[in-house]
Amino acid sequence: MPRPFSPVKSPALAEQGGATYPRLVELMQRLLAPDGCPWDREQTFESVRRYVLEEAAEVVDAIDRGDHDDLREELGDLLLQVVFLGELARARGSFGPDDVIVGIVDKLVRRHPHVFGDVIVEGEGAAERVLDNWERIKAGERRDKAERRGLLDGVPRSLPALVRAQRIGDKVRRVGFDWPDPSGPRAKVDEELEELDRAVASGEREAMESELGDVLYAIVNVARHHGLDAEAALRATMRKFERRFAHVERRVEDEHGGFAEHGKLPLEVLDRYWNEAKSRE
Image 1 (spheres, rainbow, N blue to C red):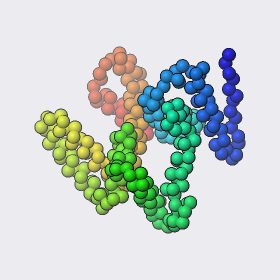
Image 2: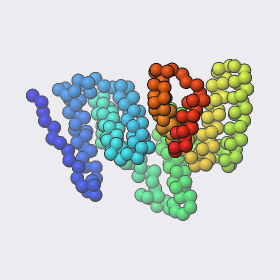
Image 3: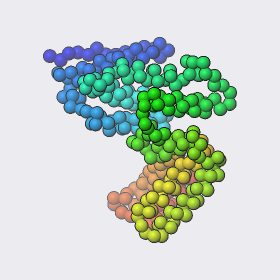
Image 4: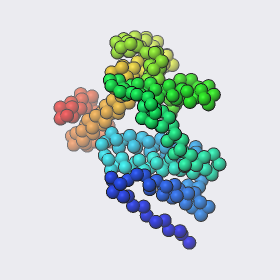
């Protein structure tokens, strides 16, 4: 006989303190129980991995859209993956949900000595000094654990390439491995473009791919030196492209019966529709 699960109600916003979080843990435990959900019970760290990536991406999409209702829902979906993995770990005898919370709380207190300790960080450049302290404390934690890890080992390899490139640039900057001003990476873009041109002229695919990567990394460094987010910039450009191409598709549908009906159209026709979209913006 099914066991009912009582609904959870949100208190008034000003009164919310996260007291409902344990209900999600309780729900996940119920789903993973012997008489719980067969699908949930078959999952592993490896099978849940892709959902973590997908839900994190949907959180980012909701932020980019400025849709707070969607953001609330997507944060719940992402939190579910955190709780799911915690319960899978508990089943293996590795750790549990409280270990996760205790670990992150301890880490945040330890890495904010300017809030919870006697370190003073004020005035211009305070945020930058906070980040420097964070990295220094983090490095000390690794020494205490006798971890032999490189400076860049903490940058996840599964991050989108532009995000990872910018994070790596930030990491090495903190130890002085960087151009002193934006003119350095800008000159590097020209240098790498020339090398890409030579690789293209050679026709060697491997060389072309390598030099293209160098160009992209140089551009990321330009963005970083100007305080820009390369990933966000490219995402914004792709949203703009999607809006404009949607107009092109509508015009092709109205004038030519659609791409499926007509196939390829002359580029000058498509360019005219594209420029219409640009002018409307």
